[in-house]
Image (cartoon, rainbow, N blue to C red; front, top):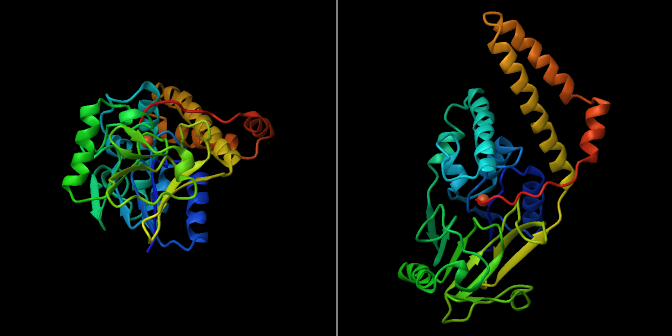
Length: 301
Ligand SMILES: [Fe+2]
């Protein structure tokens, strides 16, 4: 049975919805996720819920690993989004039956999975959370490191390793060799003697010239297809803008409230009212949101 492999959703719900719909339209029922469900994007809870419902195998990414934990290896921007992602997920955990079901669940996902002669990991087989395998000679690493990575896959008796993390689709046929795009257009069938490393790209935050949502399919005959898909970026922008507004409003009001204890309870109610009004169909807010251009995150991770 064919398997769809998705990765690096990063809280982008419109992209995830489109990819899952595309997978359904192809009549593929098995979906594996290589991690980074959260981080950066505005809808971490919804994306965790959807991935849990849709995926048979779910691997931990570095953003899943660090949410709710220290983030010293992240850039400033990634740290900031990790903090508010944790805040949103803690809120979700306060709901009925939600205790521990988001942050601890993400933090304890498995690091690797192996089945049917395939290896699944977020980063690389030698460094599951942090190593980037880039679409350049020797995967952007030294020749000896690239060889070690291929050897690690072969030692596990696997013919194909699927990875994410870099947010750039690529097929590596040998330690120093990237398969040119035209060679795998429409699907690449590995040769008998080959070991492949396939970077499936990113659903929610591609770091390529082409910003479409990306994922991969492994067909029954072993053919590997790299897929790119348009999705509703306007929906993503609206969700981002709402999240940014909520952050600013909450930030200002929390400072104010902290200085005015013990009237906190009533002030929290007022704060909620202000936030609700801003989030509602306020014509000024809506027109500002409509003017936003797609944000292009170039941060690592
Ligand atoms: Fe990522």
